Length: 307
Image (cartoon, rainbow, N blue to C red; front, side, top):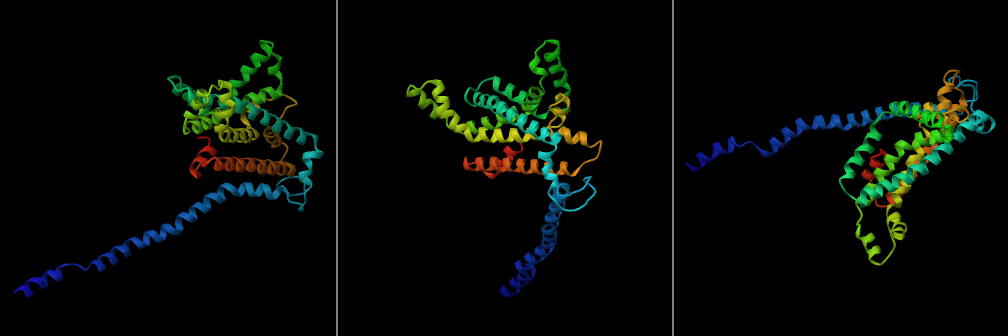
């Protein structure tokens, strides 16, 4: 009786190995599809994004009259940055204003970031909201608002400094960068122990000495990263620069925009390639500085995105 009772139970129990095999056959097919479909899709996205840049780099070695008309391979286009005064002046204006704007944005953004991190209060959320508003406002809105303001200051109030093209470009390019530097410096100091600065005060160090000997060295990786990001952002600022620039101080992005009317020439691609290499070099230096400071890959990517 016992044998007869157990035998149906054994027949009724499905084999575990059979169950696992059946479920494995059902799930293996979707995994195999996603294993090659996702990399393929990612590859297509990267090709779509970076193929135009690759075409510009290739055509920067074109020796011909127009960019789209390939003649033969050569380096003559790169010499235009020295031989053609219009190209040379536009590049120098971009480098000069980008550097000054980066210094200004780094100085103001560093002070703002330190203040938010070390003197918290009810004003901090409001100030962060103001910085967020600056970050998300479209550039065309900033440009339309900034142009009549600098005209009012320069012409109506008679402040001749605001009639200078370099000053206008520096103000326009540094607005967004100040917010970025403030974010980065605040995020850096919030994660550090404030007792190091308190110990300096306990040792009778003056506030200015504590700032230069303790606070600023602690924030220095974020300060350098903010400076480099500000410089790269200033190099390709087109919309605001197109509105506030004056004759004689045309930056490189605006020069390229105006060159569309007469047809792009190979030197446009050549100088753009140089600017691209300069920008990538600055970003690589930012990543190196942040990595040396102990930031993770996710933190570095967030900083690169302006967060």
